[in-house]
Image (cartoon, rainbow, N blue to C red; front, side, top):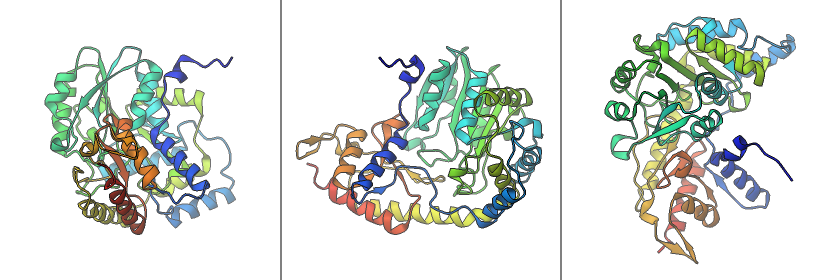
Length: 397
């Protein structure tokens, strides 16, 4: 009889990864699937970064590095924070990991204990809740709406905070909604955080470079709570380096040391060649990647315009990342060929079967009245996907 731990039995499979797997299985069977499930830029990694990696191989950078990463890379990350965000860090406050997901896990495992409360605005990224299960922390979900652009207010944060609150986790730009917090909105949240001792903020800023409304604003810019902010970043989204697995954590030194200790028992350092590629990426001016950001803006508008042809979909206008998160309850209660739609999960299954379009149910992000639609793919695929969705949804009655 197979014996599995209670922890692994409590974890849910990532629905983004699950939908991508289903898509690959259908494609292998010869089905023409358009997959809009994974959050992955369709651009190749910039040539200058690839060349740096090739040179690193030739120069024999093939040995173990410091668990937190090469010192020169951590220095380059500090320079990036100063140049792009006006934030001052030292190399001892930086931990390089095998992707932003590991950086988040490091922080959660290093800081939280069973029973600690963690405030998470909903919709949220799929792994936040699952990672909290590992330490036995308690998620306190604060629901947001399209009307609030899916952003939590200071009043909501205050109402959710208790003596057991130890952390808030959020992303800006946000996965899955594309919402972006302004400096004013972040400061209001920071003012609440500063009232409570031992209240930390895990600020997921992995989509920093894919921001459609001006400069990126970080929660760490407010000196009065900087010593309680943990920034999560990396190279996967902004530099089209998803497969390289390069994550960044910036935090007060004592937290960084704890995360280094944690990572030392799990993976040690990330790939040495990835680190040399990251070093080059950190030296690039943010304008270097604007061509990708501009393409995402154009695709967003292309999709939003095409979606006007589909009745009943409600959405905000995303200000960053590369997702649209429409509310789809208009279709609940409708059916076709014996299949009845009761939630976003049902609708995604229906669209995969009838339209051969793969989306992710909103349940993965905390609200099954929605679905997530990634527009990180070619224009013609996006238009064809919306056309297929429209034709399939017209069958529901």
